[in-house]
Image (cartoon, rainbow, N blue to C red):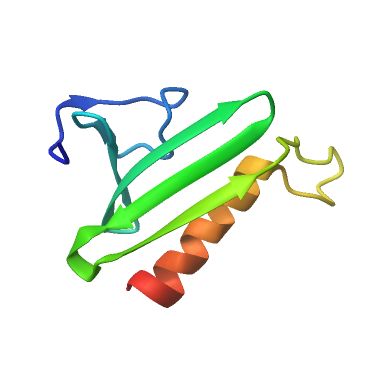
Length: 95
């Protein structure tokens, strides 16, 4: 279920260039760390689940809105915030 099957591309529920579809989850590599994940959005609600089996850790993030970044750069969008949370967890929890 967590074995790479086919290459996935942006827009198919993955984040990043080193992403593959498994048999129900996505397998993504971020900064040399392989994560098992799944995400979804519907009607402006976004959720994301990541698992790191070697460390037996994971996290869930959920947003009740999908915002775009401010044009002047003063506010990140929801997806940028999701990526920032992932990077902080990779740096401070999983590694």
